[in-house]
Image (cartoon, helix red, strand yellow):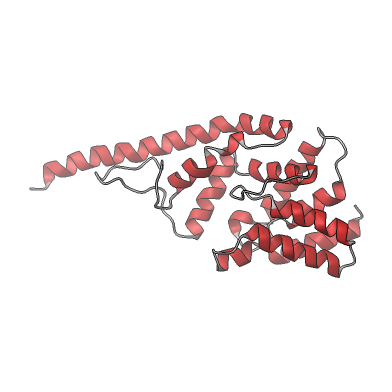
Length: 225
């Protein structure tokens, strides 16, 4: 990819980034993760891969303003139109569009091309380990969601089967399960290296919160007549 092309794509990406949990540094990490994965794969189209990584979250603003929208779908359309308007051929624009459309963890449509699978894996790697925990906590703060919810008996819920949104709920719904959803061997290997850190953090946080409620409620009960 020519420097001029890279700068064009990068500048467009930078103009779209407003979410601190999905900021430009997230984009660069995903790009660098993708390049690490691509080294272990054959026949990678780097022009498609780099463009897809740079533009994969440009629909975040629209989804944040209207949660009924899917940022992957919005972003893929924005990317296609941007590339078309700047003279890229339709086949190239369509390949980038497909990568962006299928990168989302919650989407049922799986990635088909090698570049789409690499983007999917590279993006998911940023939801693993300590980085995944940190980014999730930032996002939960942005949308004013709590660390955890309480059970009917007043104790801290683990997040399992919760309908109330919280960090623990997101951990059980997504972060705990992301490690088994990779397409490439290299991404799977990296994710496994990071998994222990995330598990330990969640277990420690739950234990600290739960013990606080257990002990505190007992002590309070002694003081309230």
